[in-house]
Length: 235
Ligand code: BTN
Image (cartoon, rainbow, N blue to C red; front, side):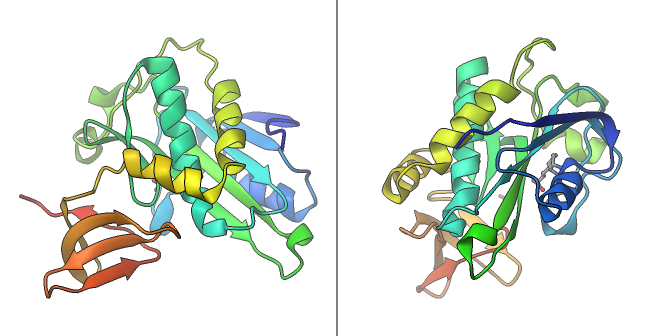
């Protein structure tokens, strides 16, 4: 599984994920990687925008085809790969917030958007893994609402982040499910914390063997969250 070839770079593009998806639809091969210095319509999870000042973060999307067999673990594996590379290049100890935000001291250093085209015939399926990693972001220059929540690796601008990241992604995507789950549990940012989601709240109790988030709900039962997003409950 070699990721990063061919590599298509744009100074400016609407969204590396949108372009990678279009290329995948048109038959681009496994490993095709799109990067950009700037995105004019960067996409986040849950239909949000992803805002990143030009040249201060790694903006990349890679095509994986066929899609990995256990799709639900792919976001967790991608989060682990990003955490690995942060540790390797910046000496930090990131945590992951289910399903795949990467945090340093509770602040977000990277966001991951995974978009998949499943197909009953596995060979025809693909997924695009899009990663925005704050490599040398000037956090103080961000809009106020983002400033409190973002953090940067503060790497020298010439640092090769893409190469090591793609290597870590390859390793994590091809790992055994048990290994992914065990590694993810060691970085779990939410375990034992009060969380809330669209229609509930409770105490996060880690992930199950399928990668779902387990939450001890206020009523006493365990809820299994399979998708969506949770937030730490304000103190
Ligand atoms: C999130 O909401 O946390 C996910 C953000 C993902 C952003 C990255 S930046 C590169 C790629 N292209 C996009 O349009 N989005 C992803």
